[in-house]
Image (cartoon, rainbow, N blue to C red; front, side, top):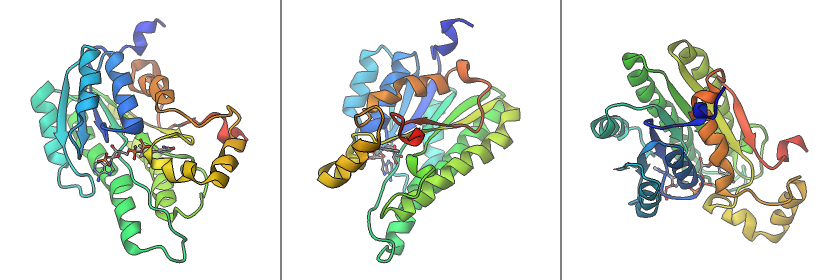
Length: 253
Ligand code: NAP
């Protein structure tokens, strides 16, 4: 095996939620490894685009709100119009709502399930249809969570979605591995992004979380760079249905 098997030169990756946090860091990592990027976001991803272009890669911005599945055909069409093919899909866009389960609203249930699970399935389906039709294989990487393994506190719809996402990763891997499509997930631990701002602002929760992380620090978005490049590259061709924890040892505790 040579280090070339980690190269993404000439590949095209769609990344949802590319404008911020983990999505931006993974986008930049993929670009530095050789990927051109179709960046999906609600806001104009100027900063991400500049970072990708300064790595010498092309960036195609696609504005889309994944709270419904309506924009999915547009995302795939735009990717194919810009680059002619799709090799990698990173299902990163996600939201969280915090409330006691006794008070939790239907809106907070539906909003989270729609973005974090429903749109992930239908975007994966649309990309897989392209990969199967073109017989060129592909890599689908879902961004799961510690709450794919654990229950969490005051985030029932998020836990349901992320636990569902780990199951979906395995279900799709079973069906699409014969087509040369690898479906895997990354489960980030507690990472310092907007998603966890409320936890870090709560002194007690912050201390409790840190005390359980063997690495002794919150994760940084860039901690996902190596794992996402690995799962997007041919170095991981025999991995199917796996959820890779990148958590500073949280789950080992
Ligand atoms: P973040 O900074 O809040 O980023 C979330 C991204 O998702 C943003 O780009 C956001 O776009 C996008 N997004 C949200 N709703 C969307 C919608 N309806 N349509 C399109 N894009 C939408 O949080 P993050 O930590 O980077 O989260 C990225 C992923 O990692 C999420 O799936 C999250 O659940 C997961 N995760 C995070 C952690 C953590 O500790 N941070 C741990 C485990 C898993 P806007 O900028 O427009 O809001």
